[in-house]
Length: 137
Image 1: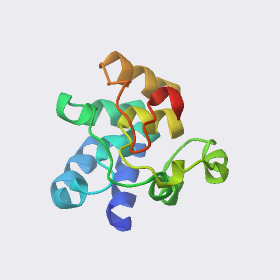
Image 2: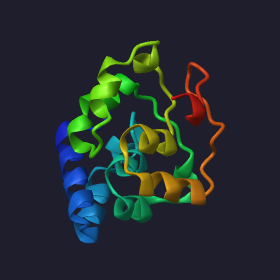
Image 3: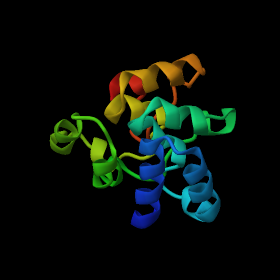
């Protein structure tokens, strides 16, 4: 997944709502974003401004190749207090893949991001590797 330094820069640009820094970070590190978690997935956990900057029809329903455990390892970038709950969650969810930006927003992001992704017609029926939809995570 993202190189830690790349993710730190990307999250900092998103939190600062710095469009120029975001563009530079995306351009310089494009290869890193084809791996486990794409920029929109990270944005979905941070703020609506970041979601609006990165939301495209092509990215809306992309699925992660990283697991929830991978996501939890980068949780210091996420705003949500739900991180502690999911660190203790079992039932195999930690080992699942194919999370969408909407799933990431539901798990870790603010309500506004969930609403923005739903309004943009995020697919609520996409499934993780264990068959969970947004209704079962």
